[in-house]
Structure formats: C-alpha cells, structure tokens
Image 1: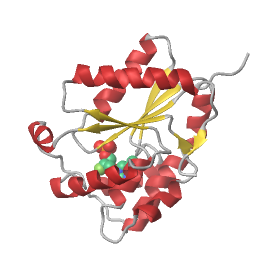
Image 2 (image 1 turned 45 degrees about the horizontal axis):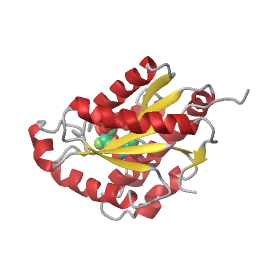
Image 3 (image 1 turned 120 degrees about the vertical axis):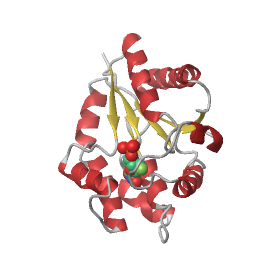
Length: 212
Ligand code: FDM
C-alpha cells in the first residue's frame, strides 16, 4: 500500500479577515468527514523564538527589523520537522498564516524588497493550497477596531494588502482568493470545497519546496 500524506493548507489575509475562525471550522469539518486534521499557526508563540516574537508584537520589546524578520522565519523552520512528521502520518495541516505573511508584513516596512524577504523561507514545505481571505475596507471597519499589537493599524495593513497582491501573482503557488466579506458559513463552504479537492489530490504527490 502506498503511504498517504496529509495536505498542507494555509489561510492568509489581512487582520479582521476571519482566518482563525475559518481555520477552526475547517479542521472540524475535515475531522467530521473522516480526514485526520490539525490546526497550526504562525507565529507559534510557545517556543523560545516564539516568545521573543510575541514580546515584540505586544510592544514589550524592540527588535531591529531584519532581525525580527529572520526570527519569524526561524520560527517556521523550527516547526518543519513536526510539520513533515504530521503530513507523513496522513494528517492534513490547516495553518493560520505562513511565509506569505512573513514577506507581506516585513516588505511593507520601508527599505525591504519582496525578494530579500522571501529568501529565508525558500525551501519550506510548500502549501498545496493557500487561500487568501479578502475583506473590503468597509467590512473590515464594521468588524471593529484594531487591537493594540504592533502592525494593527489601517495605513500599515493597506500596504500589507498590496504586498500580498504582488505575492499572489506567482502562479507557482496554488492561490485561491476567497471573498471573506460574506457570512461565516458561506465563506466556510467555499474553503471546505477547495480544501477537500486539494486534500484528495495531495495524498498522491510528494511535499513540494516553497519558492524553489
Ligand atoms: N507576522 C506574522 C509577521 O510580521 N511575520 C510573520 O512571518 C508572521 C507569521 O505578526 F501582525 C505578523 C502578522 C500579525 C502578527 O498576529 C501575528 P496573529 O494575530 O497572531 O496572527
């Protein structure tokens, strides 16, 4: 019997898009349909590197911009052995943010190119599917004010969105743009359909390498 691997599914989007809610619902639905699935998120704040990042995001410490970018990337790399192990066990991983957030957020800062920002994440496990949850600015405003963490302001998020749009032009990545301005159930339905299709396909293909 050939071994069946899980799919690597990533949800991306700017703040207030509903990524976390949709990741949880997707894991639940996959489990109910008999497919082993788990959620992961980046940054993963529980590790030593994750704690440095968390303190930075909470404005409790300052880090130089290149340094924090590399820490975000290192935080993904330190989880790669675990991710591979789970995928090889047949577990589908639903991931809340990945390298695309890494690039979009840092390259929204002055003096950073997309190219420089992508380099440290080259070769990470390549997602089988990346869904970008898109909300229009009016809907985002209806969903309430930003929190108090670093990056949670409208002007910065608009630049982040432009960077995501540049990343989405790369046809080597399986991007799907989801209109997340709709109600939770409609958004979930579309995410579920894309995910189930890709999860059935992924089991027969080896895990790819991102941006290679
Ligand atoms: N973020 C997230 C980055 O700047 N780089 C990264 O590589 C990743 C994964 O951290 F503002 C930013 C994006 C967001 C913050 O917020 C994490 P959440 O609420 O934990 O997703």
